[in-house]
Length: 144
Length: 144
DNA sequence: TTAATAAAAGACAATAATGTCCTTTATTAA
DNA sequence: TTAATAAAGGACATTATTGTCTTTTATTAA
Ligand code: FES
Ligand code: FES
Image (cartoon, rainbow over all chains, first blue to last red; front, side, top):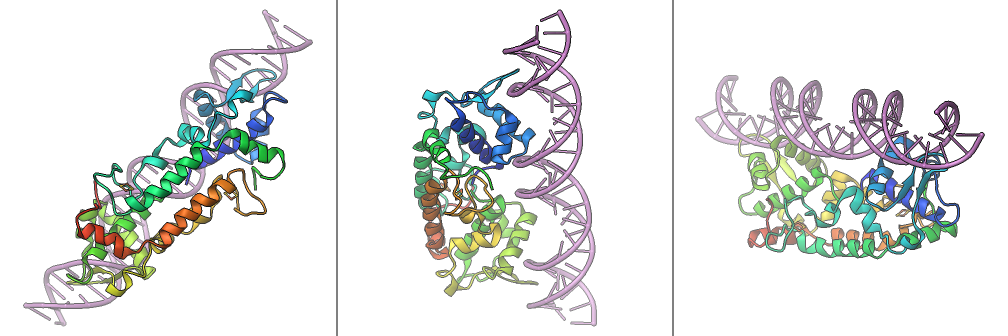
């Protein structure tokens, strides 16, 4: 569904979100440990998230990554996916035709339309806030 | 969503299906041309489909690929996807955790559940017959 | 102002996916 | 039984993805 980069990216973002407000910044090492991801690779992905203004970062002693409290509600899954994997998951033709449209539909176009619509709706309406809530409550997990 | 192999595989299968019954067998060259795919790569994918009994093949003069008429209804999209990409698309955790279950859910598990269910339902209930019908009628396309 | 810290950035390495080419095997028809 | 044909199979090449390592830059505190 998503690339490995995107999976790590979503997990990292959720983890950072759970640490927002209270402890402030979280370091790369802790993030990679808590989401069980390759540390250097995770660093690269975080750079993309920072460039896309989803995550804030600061260098030096006491530095790390964070997400502003008042952005937890407005940041949706779709923003993270878009930043890392682009919009191909939603827009691409399911059979790989160069462009997916009503005018030149592939055989699965009508069928896929609804699945894609569901996916987009879900991604656009799932906020970082609710995702991190499950972690805080110990109901959901970010590794294994 | 699917791998390139799977996309080519679905397109090839649909094309073969449209040629079933009437002209009998279709050659690799024609298939690759009609679905605009790399010919040698397509050959590999067809081998997988033949091994999975989705497509029948015969060598030598007049040989080629075909699908039995009475199997057009029973072959579903899910069979093709499963043969080429396996079942990871449906069963894999959306965030890459090692196993997706109710007992150890990731933060998006509940959200993804419904999207995946929709996808599976669609794949299990879409037959080759209906997919090839659109091509025969000139309403859907297999390339560009 | 120096040392310590931590992210950013760039170069490189390993792996997997995609794609090509050549040889072999089976089938048909002359 | 030979020649032509077309898929099967194996080896290889290319590209994209994933992952690592080292250096640079920014920040803080001593
Ligand atoms: S054209 Fe293939 S999904 Fe729209
Ligand atoms: S555990 Fe992640 S989708 Fe089920």
